[in-house]
Length: 136
View (tube, rainbow, N blue to C red):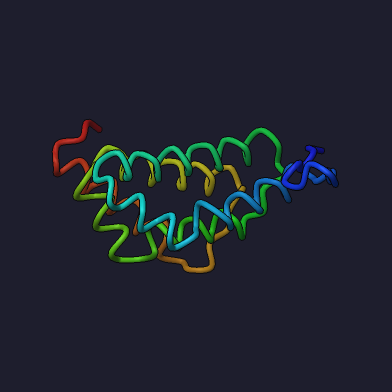
């Protein structure tokens, strides 16, 4: 349990999963946040990778993160062709990290994507990043 102090006069206890979900929905998958990060070029792409890494890390350590939340982040970053192209173009290493972390979540049973093609799509993104010079 974490204490939500958004309103300091009325702090509310929330589960870790609920707290992370609120942050992800308000920030990480918010279209304005995404557009803002895209204005920052390679650093913005790196921020997307850090977000995915932290989310999957929380899921691995707490088992309190819903797979639907991982799905939402995947869809916002890699399911959107414009955002995916931005990440790969601006920071291929970040694209590889994102794909690897999503694959890790799949392998550990933390996320069960709705589309059967996700594993192939992630493998293709890793291959594209490597073709741009990112180490295997």
